[in-house]
Amino acid sequence: MSWKKACFVYVIALAVAAMVNIEKVSVWVDDHLADGPAPGLARQVRLARNLWRESGLGPASRSLDCALAPYFDETYKNSLACRDEPNTEAEIQALKNRLDPNQPVLKPDIPVDTDDLLAALAPPKPSQAAEDVLPTPDQTHAAAIPAADQAGPALGQAKLTGSRKLLVVGDSLAIGLSLSLRRSMAEFENVQLIEEGKVSSGLANPKYYDWGKALRVFLDKYKPDVVVIMMGANDAKYINVNEKPRPPGSTNKTWPEVFSMRVEDFLEALQQRGIRNYWIGLPIMGDPSYAKQAEVMNDIVKTECGRFATSRFLDTWSLLTDAQGNYSTFLPNDKGVKIKVRANDKVHFTVAGGDILAQSFLATLAKEMELRPKTPDTSHASSLRAP
Image 1 (cartoon, rainbow, N blue to C red):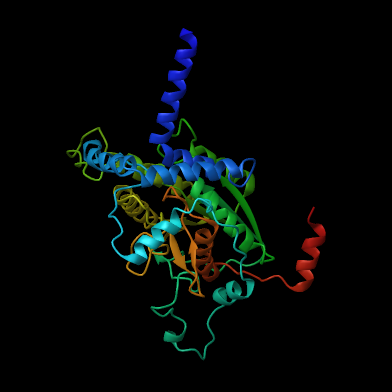
Image 2 (image 1 turned 120 degrees about the horizontal axis):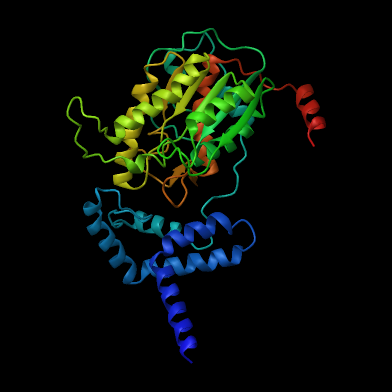
């Protein structure tokens, strides 16, 4: 009977641990099972998550988590974050919509409007006034392509023409961006997209994945004309925003200093080969303390990109914010319908969010590289060659 009691205690302990971490369990189940082998199980987990949130234990757990955060140098976080409770009917209804157990983490793929994309990338007509081509304040994120902030000198080279290879590297954010770029690039006949993202990677842990070496291998292997970088989500958590600088001449470096050196080495490999590269900055993050770390990360990368003639930093911070500049899971499209742009972990973005980032990048790329839309003949030929 003793082993039965032990098993019973173990099962109870496992169930309690799962409920305490139900937010993380729900995100994992949604990512791995919702669209695949067990959508029913994913729905049940979301129901359990909602019961936890609506019970007295959920708010108590969140309050305890927020109270403990300062003791961990503001790096102790969970997916709920520390946020104010909704106090208006609209906010309460929006929260109820987000708690809908029938809604998965990622909404179904939103097709790219080819006409709108090509129109946005086309240069303005000479007869248009400058104010006619700038987005108006009430235009939505999905309807307009915001201009990306550029750091450092212009690339200062002739516009790339002819067939070109575009290599995308980075962490899971780069993989998400690649999904949107893949569909957008399919509309052009002169671009070959190469995707080499690595989940959970970054510059912080070369023992897990050495991007300094990997980049050089990819440059030799693919010989790309343009490199797109998006990483830092895993590196930002190591930044202590309150860390004091080391005394002059100290052999010990702060993490921002170490990270700056690694970014410099990364970009120098591209500079030596004269390869144009665009570092896509981190968008706003849902957790306030993590958002501060991401801002420091962006500042470091922006500064380093400004030191290399072939590098450009593209600021995406405000692309996925609401009208007040705050983090938002949902944003209105051109028809005023709210679409989900961020995943439940408040770090990654959905396909719709990836489309916003991708189109902003393409608007910048179109100034530096010729993008030729496929004609009906080339599109037909491509479809015949597809497996």
